Image (cartoon, rainbow, N blue to C red; front, side, top):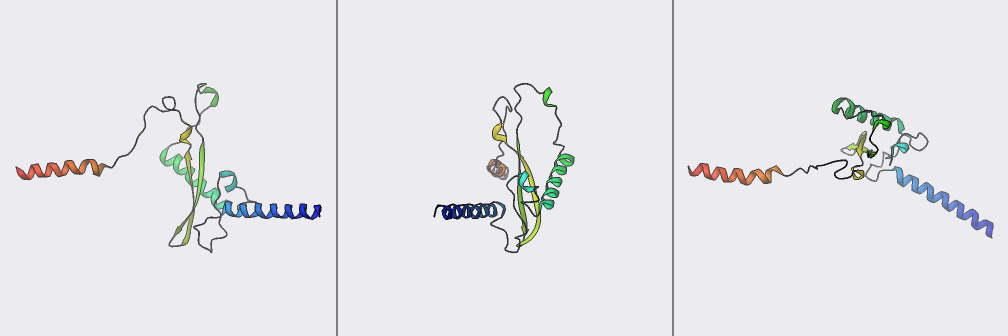
Length: 153
């Protein structure tokens, strides 16, 4: 009986791991006919041909994002780590992968790279922050007031 329980437990673990992998790589909002596509959670998963059947599409999406940021935005700067100050804080990045659909039909694979800004230290890594505001709320009452003043003249 002890051997049967061990075999049953091992089979259960394999089943649960397989279910977890399927849940990890599928997109809940994808149409039913898009089962050949995956939504990886990180770069290593996206480019792994054993776990990701559409890895070539993800590689192409990451290449497009990199080239966009490099050529259009000019964001990349190669830095020799040995030349950085001892208290320099290198901020990590994370790839985000999404499947894009238009009218319920698959359109493309999209990869975005974002910095892990929460790793920054105030007054060490940055000194000011920017928060966009609603210009319409600020300018609207002023324009309205000015219009009333001008119409009275």
